[in-house]
Length: 182
Image (tube, rainbow, N blue to C red; front, side):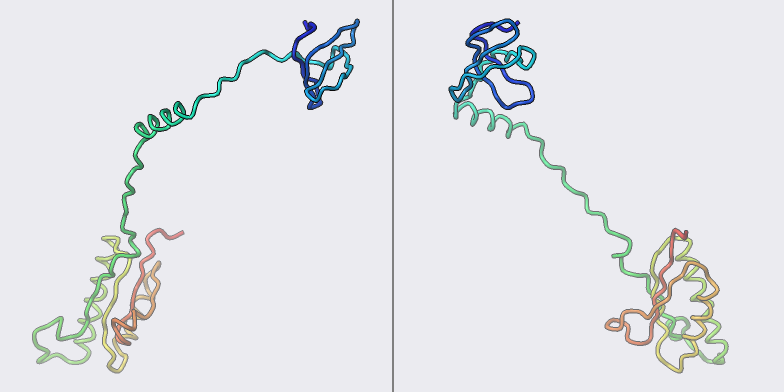
C-alpha cells in the first residue's frame, strides 16, 4: 500500500521520487530532480527503506588486511618433464663398439650383427615405451643406413628422420615411436 511520503519508483522508467498526493488511482510524486509527475498507482513500486552503511577507510583497510592473512597461498606448480624433452636413447652401431675384434668376420657378418643389435634395441625401446632412439650408423658407403631404413619400414608406428646434424653429423638417424596410434 502506497501512502503520502513513501519513496517509490516507476516501473519501466528510471524515475523515482516521494509521493506528494494520491487521488483515486493516480499518484503524484516529486522526482529527485524536483518535478511533480503523475502516474497510475499500477505503474509505481514502493521502495523499501534501507539505510546504506558506508564503512570508514580504517574499517576497509582492517578488513583487507584480515583477508590477506587468511588468503590461501598459491599452490606450487609441479613441473613434469615432458617425454618429448627427454634426451633420446642412443645406440651406437659402429662395429668396434659392438665387438672387441673383427678378425674372421666378413662384411656380411658385421652388417648382420649391426642390424640384429638395432632390431633388439628397437624392440626394447618399444617394450619400455621409450619415445625416441638415435641410431648412430656412421657415414661409410651407406649400406648400413639402407639396411636400417628397410628394417624400420617393416614396423608400424615409427617415424624416421635424420638425427640432429650439429650433434651427430650425417651418420645418424632418429626413430620416433608413436605410442598411441589412432
